[in-house]
Length: 186
Length: 120
Image (cartoon, rainbow over the protein chains, first blue to last red):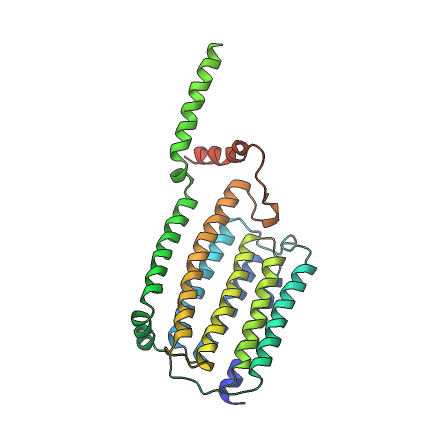
């Protein structure tokens, strides 16, 4: 057990513990805050695994943006502040499938790697990752940028009903007028 | 460094995410569980970058970055859908959503039209 192992164990325990609380807590807002703890511990894991850039991007995008968005959604859907009892379905199938997936993957990976050791590769700094992205992975990068753009446009169209339905709505209103006028004359 | 530790962490987190997606009724909590699963995959990718010596260096970390971008896009569209659902039905419980459309689709669309007109 080296120092890195101890750090990985501690951070992994924190991440799994916070993850358990995310999926079991009765408070909506607390679930979001436990998610921050879990994602932060995972960022620490990435740092120990010498993935510097990924760790900081994780802190920026997940802890900074995604969790804030989720908390906004919790507030916008008027979630109750205290504990709520109707958050869960009766969940033996969920426990069965989730536990099966988690423990099955654990058994598989433990069997594959046992207690072997590896040496950490050179740190994944922004310079090295940038070289890789813009030399070997340019095409996926561009496809992802198009995907982000389409997701942006899709989110805007979804959240503004007056954009997508403007034309049919006017048609419907005009149709109602046309329909109602003969009805009135009758 | 023993790679089995982060691998087991990731496997357990993925199981927790699956459990949360199937167990939770609130759509926002379902999205949080999906984030747990995506992060487990990120941890697998970054750890695999240390154990497997690929032809291209740091491929696992590059893929982890790609997955983070995908998660950001997913959460944006997902929350837009959740908020639209809340506007239409005044609830975000996923098992209150009818999977089969009502026989008269015009009736299902009525509240939205009324809502958006009332909002103006």
